[in-house]
Image 1 (spheres, rainbow, N blue to C red):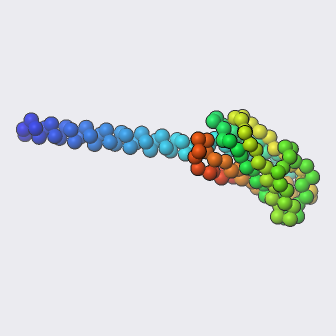
Image 2: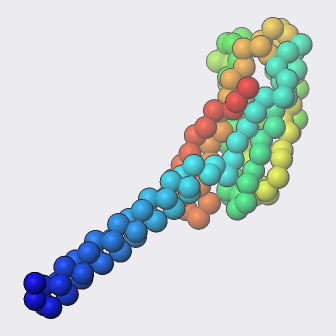
Image 3: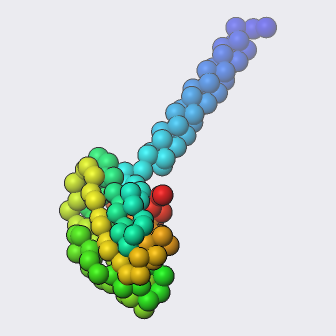
Length: 142
């Protein structure tokens, strides 16, 4: 084997190894970024006509968050804290829009009638990934 052949083989091996390492690093970074959700929500109570949930906001926080709660159609919402932006009793949808949010935890409470409606609640959170990223929609967990 000539010196020039060895040099070409080493160069190709080095190039292939570097390309593999770069691609692996890129995939790992993009997977971590996609899986690290800056917003999550979970129900703390869903009984006795009382619905309490906690929204966890990471850093950096998104500019705004939309919370939608879905109740059985015809449910009466007697109180919300903070005040809901829109309550649609006929469809059972309740909507909040939180602007200029900060990192940390935010609690949301809603009183409903009949009391059994609290057991059937479900919800979603929508936000745009900080830095002009994509729109994300995640369920509120139990």
